[in-house]
Image (cartoon, rainbow, N blue to C red; front, side, top):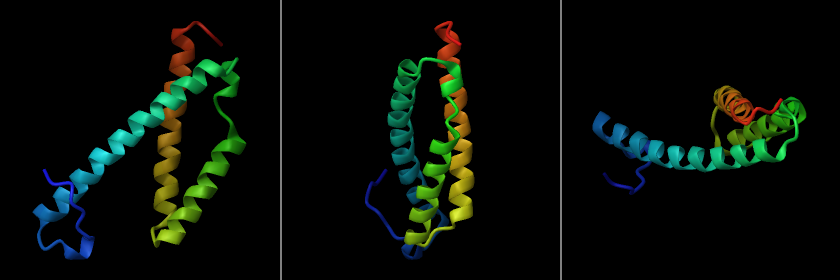
Length: 104
């Protein structure tokens, strides 16, 4: 289990490609776990469940993601779709936090 980065073009086999994807997945899980802590805290700070979905904030995040994707040579449509799915999952997570605390 190596954490040494290999560029995609430097991968000569599927095993190398998969090892790099696995390395990235470990990083992504770490970051998503950290992000979920901030989302949980946001649920504690927000006064009502209606505050959970903040459409202007969502669109601001998406705009930043698309811009970063373009600057990195990535597909902005792909990253937008991933982020919209992630945001939807975090909204559901935050709504469940409200429900567990009996808040609305």
